[in-house]
Amino acid sequence: MTLCPACGSTNIEGVDYCDACGQTLSHLDLPVPATEVEKSVTRDRLSTLQPRAAVTCGLNATVAEVLAMLVAHSLGCVLVVDHDGQLVGVFSERDALHKINCSAAEMADRPVSELMTAAPQSLHCEDKIAYAIHKMNLGGYRHVPLIDEQGRPTGVVSARDILRYFTGLLASNAS
Image 1 (spheres, rainbow, N blue to C red):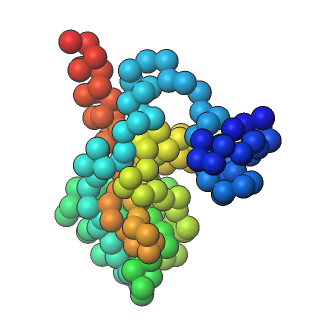
Image 2 (image 1 turned 180 degrees about the vertical axis):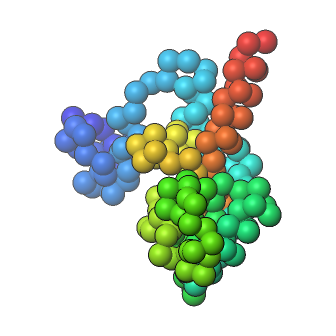
């Protein structure tokens, strides 16, 4: 049995929410971090990484326009938004390589919505770094969009951001 820290009610082992008060219990099932690096990853928020601001385009932006954005801003991805500014897709350098490859001239006028990765996994700036690592690992992603409460993009966390974070942690723990 699991005891709810919020109201003290007893719940069945493994449930995500308290039956009595609805408080999340999922954090109670997490393993105890064994090292300082593990503690940091499960404690620190994505905002710690100082994620890059979101660069967005509309659904009707052409492949040529989005490729130019990637190059001009030295980006790994552009976030695709609908007319309300809601995140609906990601077009990444990997999409360019795998879906366009040597056909850039032939596909230049096509809308990015035909080639983007639709319905991308996303997180919020105050989510933990461990969540981003988990999503990247399971999905094979190099970028995770960050959204606000309305589903509008605010930034992007990249694998490079996380590597930089780990490098900093290891350097500070070595001294």
